[in-house]
Image (tube, rainbow, N blue to C red; front, side):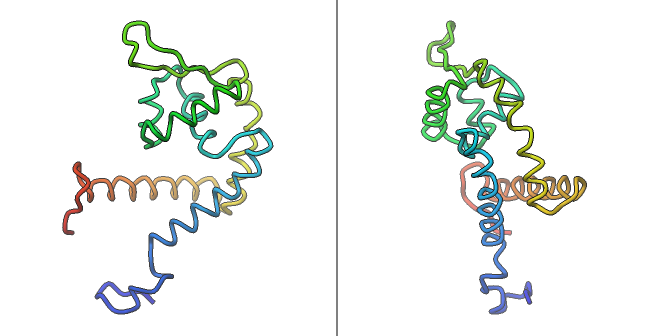
Length: 159
């Protein structure tokens, strides 16, 4: 049983929110893995494609920001998606420092082949639509709260 008065129970692994989130994230990602492997995708590549299916073309910076990934992480993902024929990167004509990401015809067609994935994940979560949406809202609130707690400079504030 967890208490908020700083007892030793607070140091039990089963009482750690970070471990519960980590375990849940790994479990959910493990469900995605075989579903996406059938399509030749990894989970991070799937996330990149989701951002582009919502809106494209997008700059590399926009894709990275949408996924909270830095350039060093997003660039290899885009390179592999480009090699697979799903996206194309183009330098902007007005500013060659800006690279935009465009879906190819194959990338657009892939969208129709992944429609079963959200349903499969929903089944794996064991939540109905309402409970899943509530979970998403709770997780977004948690993310925003931790970002606010860290502050702009990454330092934590005493709470």
